[in-house]
Image (tube, rainbow, N blue to C red; front, side, top):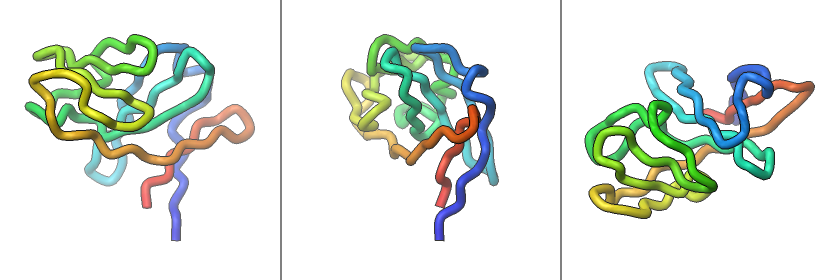
Length: 104
């Protein structure tokens, strides 16, 4: 069984931006791409557990604000030192102008 949780109105996330979303003790990062698609990953950097929503989005990349480690937020792949462990990604959908995250 899957659970879709409403995150926010889609207009609350600008293109090439990321927001933090906390649900059931877990932190997620929700992204809006330059192509106007939405994506979700774990919300904490796999290097030192820093909130990625405080990072910088550049095209398909999120850069951690502490040590500048990089991930592809569409695939979760670690792209630059010091990070070497990928992020988990999660399904996202938009319905009636709202962003939903699948958490289970």
